[in-house]
Length: 270
Image (cartoon, rainbow, N blue to C red; front, side):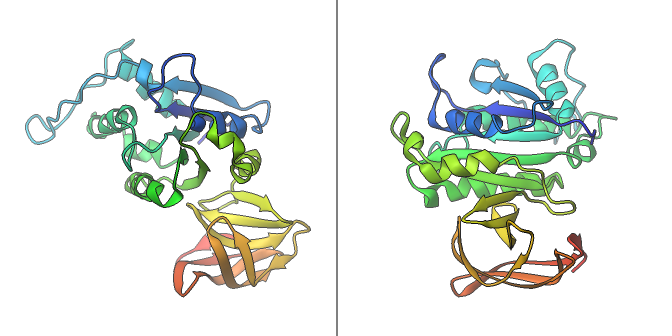
């Protein structure tokens, strides 16, 4: 991954041109906090003209490099040029909009272009999801799908930002989502597939969409109960020189939801 940050926003909404939906609005709020030297590329998939994916995995078995200047070559080049890939995807029928699904189907072709090493290149990038709908629980299938896509390509899922959508401009009334957007693209922790979000003087570090550990804004470690984006969370773990060190467990309610082992802030082998 190059040191210069290049964020590719793939807008999956099918709203008419000129209309900014809830999810894109939330993504624009998050993007506004990126450092000025960050390259931003915005692609509206509904207007990209993505062709139908033809599945020849079990016949020909491979795919040629998309032709120079074609829609899919442009999307491939944009995908490989970024350091951070952001799905800007409202929930459509509990899942990805068809525009994003069509783009993802072509990953199956790119994985089979001889010499491209698509999976290896993608593993050096971060994946993010920004989404809105009327009910957070009903967004979970799409969040899970995003996490599985990231896992398959060995990409860190750097964060998920959800806002309450539904009616036009509904997300603008979601103060929590707007607040989280301001720090959503905060610099990821070294060695942690996550990002930091600050709320109520506590900094939460995330692995995927789950908070892994927390500290006060002063840098002092925080262990105990706190209200995070996933309800009441109970952290347990040790810190060394201000970094999480050793086994770290997050419990939500009566179930353990995450376990990681750290070595001075770096994820260690379990």
